Structure formats: C-alpha cells, structure tokens
Length: 425
Image (cartoon, rainbow, N blue to C red; front, side, top):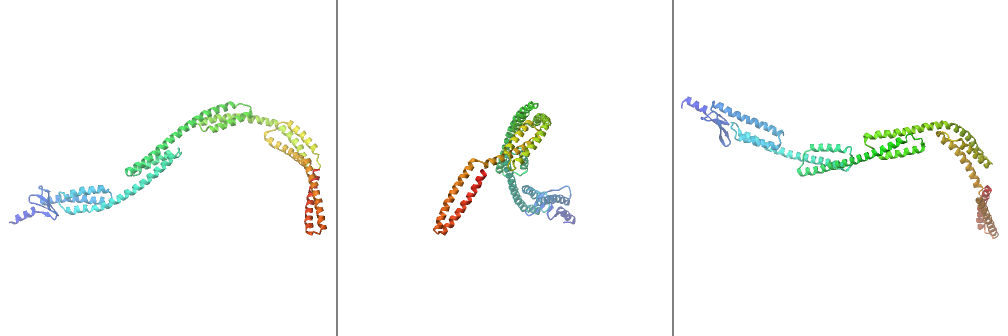
C-alpha cells in the first residue's frame, strides 16, 4: 500500500475516543454496548462530521447541566423533575451525538436519589401545611359558628367576609375533610345571615311602629303647647315623655325631626309657664315680706314656751292667731316657699313638743299607777320590817343581814316611786 493510500484510509477512519467516521461517511458513537450509528455527514470532511455530532453532544450536556441545577436547587417539583429527567435520559440514550453518553445518562440517574429526598421533604412539607391549613380552617369554622350563635349584627357580617377571604387563601385539604369543614363554615354563614336579616326586619318593624307612636305624641304635644293649665298640662307632658322613651327609636331619617317637634312644643309650654310663674313670683314678693315679719313673732314664742313656768295656753293662742295671719298673707315666690314653711313648721313642732311633755307628766293613768306602786312598796316594806324584827329577836344574824339588804332595796324603789308621783302631780 502506498503512502498516499494509507493517508486516505487514516482520514477516512478519523475518530475520537467516543466516536468515529467510517469510509462511507457513517458516524458512530462508542457506548458500553459497542458502537452505534448516529448518522452520516457527507457534506464535509470526517473531522467536520465528528465536530457536528460532538456539538450535538455538547448541547445535550448543557441540557443535563441545566436540569441538574434546577433539580438540586429545588426549583422543580419532584414529579416535574422526574418527568424531565426521564424525557432527557431518553434523548441521551438514543441521541444522534458523539460523546460520553453513558456518563451523561449516569449523571441523570444520579439525580434520582436527590429527587427522592426532595419528594420526601415535599411530602412532609405538604403534610405540615395541610395540618396548619386544617387547624386554620377549624379555627375559622369555630369562630363562624360562634358568630352564628351571637347577635353582633354590626361587626359579624364584616368578620365573616374576612374569614371567607382567609379561607380562600388557605391550601385545600383532602376532599372529604375540606368539604366537611366547608359545609360547617357555609352553614354558619347562612345561619348568621338569616338571623341578621330577621333581626333587621324586626327592628325595621319596631322602628316603623315607633314612628307612628312618636308622630301621635308630637301632635299631642303640639296641641298642649298653648295650654295655661300649668299643673295638669305639665303632668300630661311627663306622661307623654314616658311614652316617648318607651316607644324606642324610629327610623333615623324621621326620628330627629319628630323629636324637634315634640321638644319644641314642650319648650313653648314650659317657657310660657316659667314666664307666668316669674310674674306671680314678683307679685307674691310682698306676701313673703309679710310672712317674714310673722316669723319674727312666731320664733319669739319658742323662747317663751321653753321658759320655766310658761303659760302654754296663752302661747298656743298667740300661735293660732299668727297662723291665721300667715294663711291670710297668701302665696309666696316658689324659691322662698320651702324656707318659710319650714321655719313656721319648726315653731309649731316646738310648741307641740312642750305640750306633749306636760301631758305626759300629768297623765292621770300614769299618776294612778304610780300611787298604786307606792302602796304596794309600803306594804312590802312593812312586811319585811316585821320579819326583820322577828329574826333579830331570834338572834338569827344571817337572816337579819339578808332582810336588811332586802329592806334597803325596797326603800330605794319607794323613793323613786314617790319622786315619779310628785312629777305627775
């Protein structure tokens, strides 16, 4: 074989450790199972053919490297990672490329334990999240059921909306558990909404009823506004006010207007009454001056009636005359009435107290009882004295001593009875 022929054969058999180009232009890749045809490249030299199929391998190697990064970083879910590894491995095994395909497949196989660890971790994470989600949903359900049993109509609806928004953000559980909790939550919301609607319907009915009542009360109050029967009309206004409070609130848009009507009528009446009373007070001011003068005389009787040997009958007669003058003086201003009446009443009470005391001292029944007591004590003393004399004659010193003590006690009681009898006399 000539040198030129040998050179041509070497060029035809050009290759690398992972592949070669046959004489007919077929490109082979070397694997653990032997050579495998990956294609042909007739447009260029064998070196260009190998370079073309080697670049294909490099592209696959780049894909494997990228997949390794995505798997090891955890950016892919285990199921997606497994699917991607499987698909790329099939490409590597049957690749029309020249390179260490076996090592490239082994790199993909090495990702299986990594994915298994991630799958286990993801499973534990899902279980933890499911447990947290279940606890959160149970808490939401419990709160919703509490709201459904309560009467917080103002804040309950907003709170249930917030709970629903939170529920939607939580991960789903297994279907049976999730559906059971959702049914409880939904039932609680429905129950609350039904009760809330019923409450406001009743409240609307009550407010409408209150509107009817308050319209009537406002009309009655306006009809009384010009009355000059001050006492009876003031009493009627008190009765109307009690009815007004008992009626409860009317619809907001009319409640204030009705109150303004009712209050305005009251103000008109009581303003007129106060003006009339002020005029009367001014008219009665002179009467108060008369009664002040009478009180000076009446209060002077207090010192007289409390003096020793006072003539009670004369004092009572004088007080009756003062009382007649007092009544004749007429009405006084309202702001003086309590003070003046109180001073006059105090004088009357003082005179009556002295009279009661004198009667108590001169009570015939009490005097008779005192005399009876004196007689009994004197008889008892005489009896005790006789027994004492007998004991002394008998020389019974001990009995003498006891009877002397008894005699002294009875004598003391007799002295007290005589003093009382003297007071009654």
